[in-house]
Image (cartoon, rainbow, N blue to C red; front, side):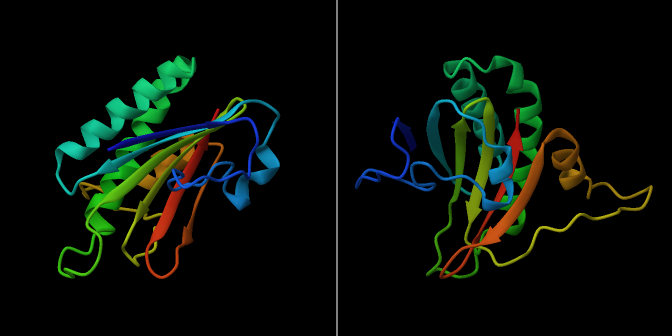
Length: 167
């Protein structure tokens, strides 16, 4: 499922709004904002391994449509890491009452694009420092090195959003 929003008046929400709402921007990155167009696109990732590839393709397509092709390479790496973490650590597959999907949103505010992933999990993203023989654990280091800023916030009643801002 793909949802696309475009607005010239941030803060005017409609019944068709999806996460994030029109005009959303991570509070911890508000100082980065510059004037310019505001638009967003959201994609629902099912809990399958092929969803990471789909998320990368979705991101590349959206950035191309927005005329921001220069961001595609870095965005694909960031999206790969955040999607993998959301699918691996954020889904609650053992709880049938919880949603089993991850939502990916790209939010453009002027020249900046935020990639945001929501998931129903309660685990907190943490920068790990893996040993030399560990096969993983560098994902958030990649996100940190390619983005202007990244972070996360808890969502009510459960879940979280993890985001990264690129320019």
